[in-house]
Image 1 (cartoon, rainbow, N blue to C red):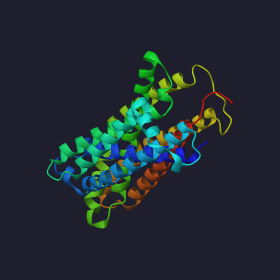
Image 2: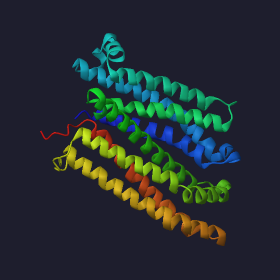
Image 3: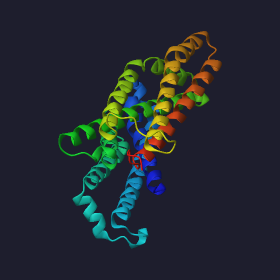
Image 4: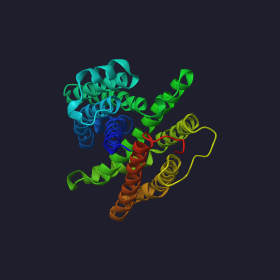
Length: 307
């Protein structure tokens, strides 16, 4: 197992998921003047940082790919023609090039001070979504031929986008729950409204994850039960599914118990206990999401067939 490659994959998943999910959340959850509020400004700053990090991580990922393809022992001995061959002669290289262009455009959108907030957020989400979707070409999604290849890549890309939307919403909720005293009251009201109103988009996200996950499983493993040894593909996949179920349980608790409790507490003027409970649940859900992305990074490097 190349742990440098795994670490880069994990960092790219986290970075691009947040780069896509945060502006998307601001686009569908914030209304009117809220798109120029402190939370939208924070998301824009994070988008700038995320775009730069994505470019640097992508440069690292192509170096790792070049080392693996050439069989070189050290990165220092890699020659330029190896990179040229990857970029122009492989699907991975084409997807990498598209990602780099999308990230540069994302950075330019984040730096655009004259654009309207809604236009800027839409551009950020669109370019970041393209960058996130290109990660499908670096995993099992590119293993098939013919029509199956496009179906698998499409399902993998949709799975990544749905995961990014969930991760971005979680990050936004955590930011709101940790708001500084100066913006606290407004942040609590915004957290209450957006968390209570997340049900529809959350249902779409979960449905997309389940459907595309089933399609990916069929293409990768087939109609069989994989080996469930702890460090095998099947064992790690089972761990990912267990974490996903735990996230669903926490999301349901947030939606049906903790968010309504916060709304009631805000009306009563005593939201301290309610916000701490919701914050704790959001932190747990975010931790589970981080572990899921870590497992995805490892799973993409493993063969589903038992060794």
